[in-house]
Length: 610
Image 1 (cartoon, rainbow, N blue to C red):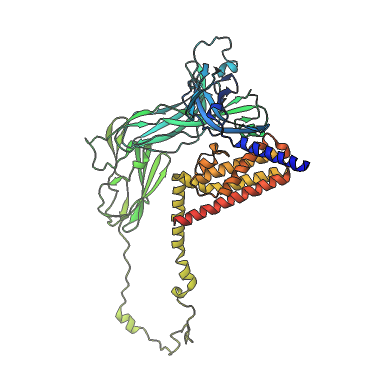
Image 2: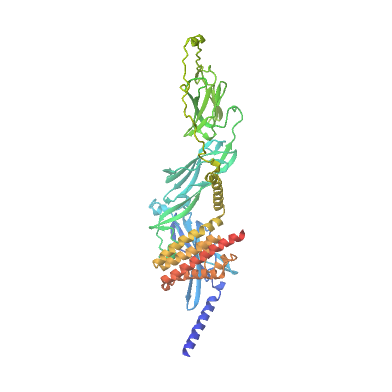
């Protein structure tokens, strides 16, 4: 009887606990606070802003892009749940990276938001941004009284050799990254708007130092060539460039598996801060070529050129071929350089020239066949171009190129005297001795090989080009869809990335590393769901699963198993002692089965659409 009463009390206590856990959190219980991981930083470093909501895990990230003096980047959420004496508490912290853009003292907050009809206001936090040059010991004797902008330490400039160009005229474009008192790495190639221009890819950038207004800068100079393809006024740029600013880290963060996940900016005592820099745009005017005094043989060449002409061999007989070499060299747009014009083609048979484009010159090799034996030199050869420096057309004429053509050899014909033939004695030939047969009899005639068109292997090979063409078209369509349809690309990559996460979790399970194992499981499931359903991965939690997966046709049993795994991952961060290797293998098996189900469910969706 005593045992029955004790059992009843335990059941009642469990039911009451479940009722307490199932009570929804009131909006009035939500507490809203903000924190900074440090109160002073230098230009080029970053601070972490934590926006903490106590009492709910369903509050989404706030937009803090308009903070004065800072560029912000959202890193992700951190959720926490705890149970004390049967009472459950939960919270979510949204973490941001703040990169200062100028020095000074700043106050962040109070921030405010609305939740379930109530408005909440946070506390205020203060932070001071110091000049990075002062940290390095530069100008230590001078008192800095003016505000230092981040763009005083690192900035991007576009520079072009000419702002007024003729159509097809080549110009040198430079995109220069200036850095002072900072260390920069992982610099990407610039991107810029170039509508109305044809551009070449950037080559390897040059590195040098310059002194500007008494400040020494390290410069990374990206160079290329451009030319206008249509007339008018255009905006070139702005150019943008991504890089990482590297500074020595003085941040103190307690070690934990969760913090390790977000420590992507820390390596070997240094901190890497991603930054995107933009330049001003350039205004370029593209002019059309003048119609006045335009030569008839002008074909679009623009620049400053020279013409060399030679012929080999220079002494031939009529009907023999010769090779004419016409070399255009100099500076300008060689894409617009065409073959010089031969003024008079009479007495020659001519073929199309072979063209070779070499550095700073273009070679035209043309085969000529003289048909007249009275030729002593080549006709005049003309090449016209537009000189952009003087703003006028010029024509180069090459004359007196010597070519000596003589008459062709005549066949010698010997006429025999009939009387001499009659006086010569005739020899009597024996039949059968004057003809030597190659083979007296052809033998039996048989078919040695069948016709090629009857060969099945030959017929099968005729389909090979068609198969390669169809495969190429499908491959091209798939690549186009991957580049234009981000949702499709994410769904396609979801199982591959999930397999990588599963392998990592298996390694942690074999080493009995419970915290790292559950972090890997949490990240794998969260990233897989985000990629599989094309939703933001950062906001996926156990409480938000119903919202994210609503209308996806997911079985309720699978949804419950997903929630259990997410809740287990959250709980392990605070009570890892109850986790053993068997439990981890069970969780791993559950995760594999869920992902396998969702992959099969995807195939069913595709068949249903068909």
